[in-house]
Length: 125
Image (tube, rainbow, N blue to C red):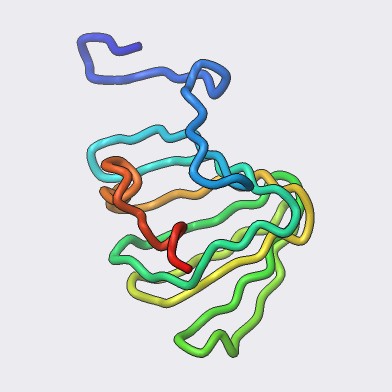
């Protein structure tokens, strides 16, 4: 919902839920220079190693994600409910859901590959 000022109001329950893989779904809200996403991961879901120009904040609302940071994944960080991980631009990372997880991801600028569904790293073998 928008008004004359350009301010928009959203309800998560009204946002479409996109199935990305058998174990991952997401909902997106996008502004001109940032994106907010609810990401729903089932226990055992793997987000393959990737990197992007977008700066990322990951805030875990429920569950836990085990992140592997860097080209070789040598830096490991477990992020649990109530914790936030900041990932700078172009830093390779992958994640594994240690339990059913709901995370809020914030990206700046918005993830164009998520908007146009060219985020093929989810489907690499």
